Image (cartoon, rainbow, N blue to C red; front, top):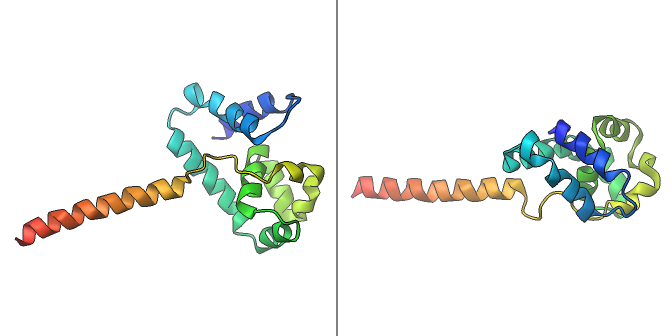
Length: 136
């Protein structure tokens, strides 16, 4: 995952227009040869976001700045592990003006966790039907 993000940052940083769509496109551009399993990439990306989201201080900082913690975490993960550690130690405010760009999600609108939950529900329904047929 970090290799994809490193290449995506190198593509994103020189862009004149910096938007979430461009950031997302920079990530997607490097999936192919570096990370063929897109769902696994976003799952690992979300795991990194959880490191920030587990911090009460992070939530408090985001709330005081009227930002959505999940969205901010996604942008910080895009910036790399050094920035994650900096934010955990010194707070969200250390990101300065970049915070204005962190209002929208980086990842696809359907969360990977929602896809996993849907897959689990489907599997549970199949298991219920198998169990019902065994009882009959």
